[in-house]
Image (cartoon, rainbow, N blue to C red; front, side):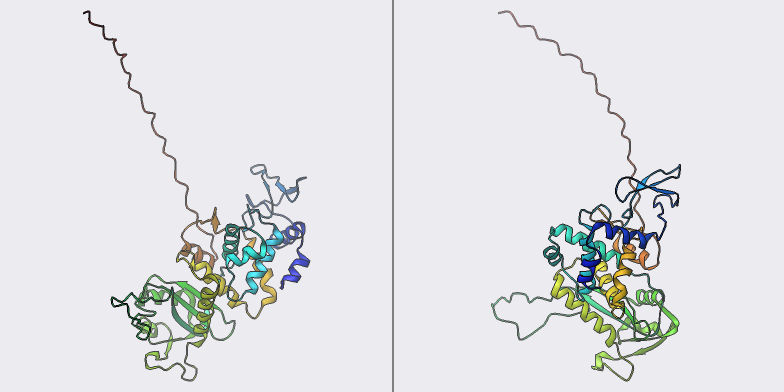
Length: 355
């Protein structure tokens, strides 16, 4: 959906609320606290009250969603979602700040909430599947030479494997729905790669294409495995290649380089979720906006008070599996025993000596 259509259709908060109520509840509102359907409308605007005797709480359609407790107007929220979906290589918080006329802090937090709504629940990948790893991080820098000589002609710094960059693994379907899945990998070992293979790929109905990296060596025991030998500078042999997933990595890296510039490892899974979400809907852009709004009103928030509820990888994995996000239990307050004050004896006044 383009921005002109969004401004025309959702130009007031009342229209936005009505649309969110339809997307979340349908015809009858449901209490998000107890799940009861016996609900009455309050005189206060957009509020409902649960008639269940054990509950009797007020609520709105925004409760538990990414829009809750936000001072940003709902029409601006809808515009933000439209802008992020239309920006193929992402949109920085500074650009959102300029477009919406809000503070940088509001722009960053709102965009991060939208990215949480973009984490897909994906079924197993099938057919011809490609798997490849990428390394996210800054360019290697030359150290200052002691003789103060230019070293641009001889590049001695490493790229990819063996550097301190963050390793990311991606799997993509070449045919059918052409979906992609990404995950930040701790270490690129054979054991970890086999776990990702079993987690995301239907091994009985798939053919796997990879390069000649060592950690793909045991894939033959799990799935039909075809290898393209990149070390011998071979990149395509008939249908054997990994160009599809490498094309996706080029979108991610160009987006980071051109829009975001710097990302932290902590929030990298949210940015990868945004790129994957838009890549998976590149052929169904007309329904992407409605689908994102539907995900946004789901009663499952990722962030609370500018911080994730729990570890970001746990949030990503639970959302992909269709489970509820874990919440850290609140620490119990330890009652301290009152400290008894020692009774001090009053000091005796010294008698003045007679001269």
